[in-house]
Image (tube, rainbow, N blue to C red; front, side, top):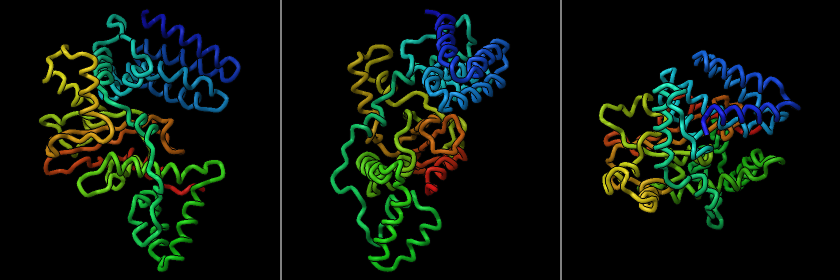
Length: 354
């Protein structure tokens, strides 16, 4: 089935779903399509952002899921033609996960868009086990809570603590003071409408300690542990080698996942296009997913976790935030790149609920 037919059908579904709630959404969808047709890429991207805000409103709850895939597709088209190949690939990866059998008509779309789409398909095909799935299936050990002692504030709970809370903890001089502090600390976060905050935090800590340990450092105290404790499992993620000429201190080229270790190993082991699905799956398990470490810690690679908007803390307006971890000789292992977007997102997750 051609894309014209598929997207026309999607538009009918969206319009039908919106007829009883927000007529502006199908109008915006049509406006965006016209902007794409007129090659007004920046305008179309702005319209897509407006649509996502509208679709996220409670009155339009039924539309959010229906719009996710087509908007990811059109965002990829716009980003590709605007010269943002990495962002285009990330958007197309989102689309391909929702529509794994999709293909792009090279007669309807530009070479840039087709190239980004094909790169996305290859990246998704080479992904290993889902971190989110592994976390969902993870069973934390009994008594996962940190013991209340003088070192409690130096444990993974430090990722949650605000500056004022750190000062108050430092002032707690006795075991009784510390116990009272910890009870107050969790009470402020285990709100009546979400009593699961502390158990979820403790499960994340236990998962990190099992899967992200680096040498003698607890997994929950590493950079990956910090991000996971605060934001939870990413929407999706992957790893690729850092190629010659790429600077681990620069954001360029570090915002999305390219060719993965598993894909590289597949070609090296079996030759291009010669691996069976079972062999590819075995390599994915070996090279990707939770708990995987490079055979040599001196290998240069980056691991990127993508967080779509629905996983971000309240008040964060980004459509997607990427956490990029660099492993490079002389630089460090799984070092989080302190880009403004990820820092703002982590800070929002750290804030104590009001």
